[in-house]
Image: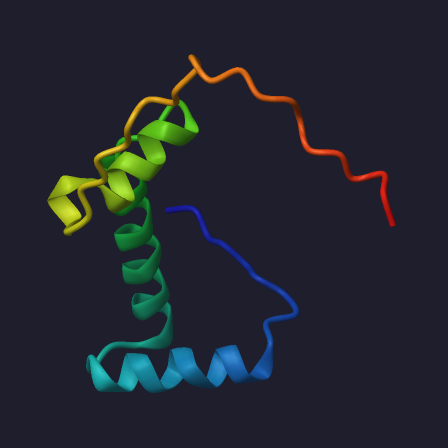
Length: 87
């Protein structure tokens, strides 16, 4: 079975991983394997949005408590652009 060596792990991160492993009654190595499996499974299960609108709809759409009723812009009004040159 292949092995994985990770160097220069932040001491605080190492301590948190050890504490988490102890909480789950697992070795540090088994805890890291479990975290990697869980993380990869979530990435594979989550659909990747193809554009910004798809991402916003997935995160903030009607299934998540936000339903925005956007009115189309009124292009019939013909007004001059604002003048920002005056002090």
